[in-house]
Length: 125
View 1 (cartoon, rainbow, N blue to C red):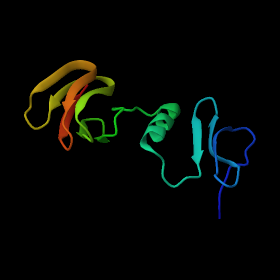
View 2: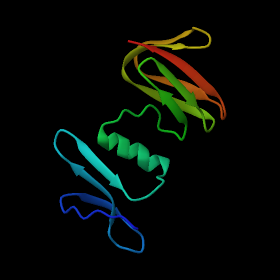
View 3: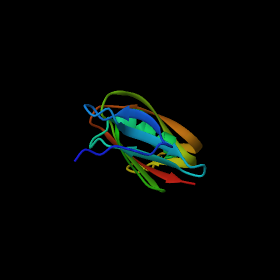
């Protein structure tokens, strides 16, 4: 079966190819937002922007792999270059492997990335 949205209250951002029916829709309910997608796989930039729309914190704008919880942040870099990593709240950031303090009371941090490298950071409020 091919699924599509039939809700007239949604904002359609994409259609199901070959069917012409809404396949990527969003709806704002005031205190929360809903996103529905017919596709099985989404490109990372689209998923990242849908997360922003839904109010999800986005740590990194690159194609990196990010694992995070309240106290830890691990980033596996997909390419070389500088990254701006953003934190959901002001944090003291330390390199979890060396113990070196990288920033205090920071909302963001600049990191130099090398493709294939993984940085593991400890976050303290």
